[in-house]
Amino acid sequence: MIDSTAVELARLQFGLTAMYHFLFVPLTLGLSVLLGIMETVYVITGRQIWRDMTRYWGVLFGINFAMGVATGITMEFQFGTNWAYYSHYVGDIFGAPLAIEGMMAFFLEASFIGLFFFGWERLSRLGHLVVTWLVALGSNLSALWILIANGWMQNPVGAHFDYHSMRMEVTNFAQVVFNPVAQAKFFHTTSAGYVTGSIFVMAISSWFLMRGRNVEFAKKSMTVAAAFGLFAALSAVALGDESGFDAMHLQPMKGAAIESEWKTEAAPADFTLFGIPNQAAHRTDYEVQIPALLGIIATRSTTGVVPGIDELVKQTEGRIRKGMVAYGALLKLRAEPNDAAAKATLAANVDDLGYGLLLRRFTNDVTHATPNQITAAAWSTVPEVLPLFWAFRFMVGLGFFFILYFASAFWLAAKRRLDRHPAFLRLSFWILPLPWIAAELGWFVAENGRQPWTINDVLPTYLSASSLGAGTVATSVAGFVIFYSALFVVEVYLMVKYIKLGPEYDKRPVGQSGAQALGAGE
Image 1 (cartoon, rainbow, N blue to C red):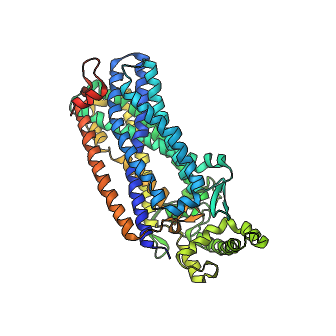
Image 2: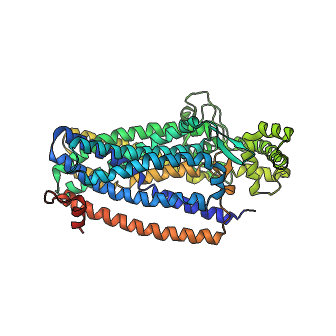
Image 3: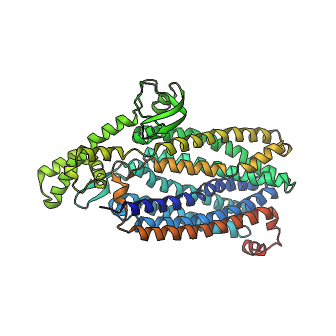
């Protein structure tokens, strides 16, 4: 039997490192596009203030980008250390988007970011603008390929199981790339990143205005961020709805858990606005519901039925029994690869093989699992409902708050009154952490809601881990906590330092390099 403690520690480590890395990704996405917009205005108008804006926000982008690279590279090594069987089982498919991301996106972004910082006096205005937009393109392409890989984990299309190699192999790479889950996740995630970048610019600019510093610089920065942020917030909510719709159809257990939907209701199902999920009793206490809303959102109709958790568990038991048949056929083929009957049996039941693998957590003799073991395996597909239920609602609530906030900011910017409302400036500063909280909640809902699967319906998390002892993984977790804590201190120090310096950091004699200017600030 696999060491379940080691598996949970490996999950903890990957969860911590992924969530920490995801602190830098949204800001990179958002600031990269804002830099492109600001420099475009500079090239069109020739006004020095837009150049100053691009350079200043570019410094903060560079600090954040460097930290994102440092945390992202170390995170990916875990696929080979802590998740070796996962890498073996699906590496042919999962590894391809990550390799393309490194070659096409990361190298593009990393190469041109140097030209962005050191090319101001060496490139023409138009040439430098192209470089800036290529940095933004690289950032977004990087997110695209990573989310294609992640989207396949949620909805494994374009692949099949090969009993000869005991691995999943690609059958249609186009289906992997154009996976609807991946596309919805990409646009939703990038929109959330644009919201984060816009809030960041709004918060720092409001800090300048509250101190009467760099007033024109801050007002123009806020104007750009308000317009871009409103577009991004509207997009994030609309595309989040698309992601939720996909989850309801392709990952119904995740959808039911998010909604704490225990019993299948008559269409259209009510939406639970408030409640306390009671997983032990299979019910939701203290419910406050909006009639028919869940059915309309989840099925986009008034007649579609949203299955509840109890019904989905019963369906899962049936799939587990078919998975047992597939597992038995696989054992025969391992012993005799030319067994025609076993081939036919496996082909007929291979889509449920992953459900048979769920039993490995409860018994080594999968083909003779008891009814109690089958029931236990079926109920193991229900994720923790309470944290998913509330994480989703806080995330959605923040999304609608951002729409209202940016709509207000856009109105004030249009009226040229951004600096005349101290309460609004204070609000803009203090909401700085909120987009990161929303982004982390979204990551938690997507990834924890998929449990107990690493590859939905295909490979259980329990079987994905490497053969490591709990002590080894615990030591690794401790090392990552120490290393990432040190990086956090460095990040905060550098960000605070250059935020306080403001655009004045760049007031240097003509011909002094950007590197020398940064060094002079030490």
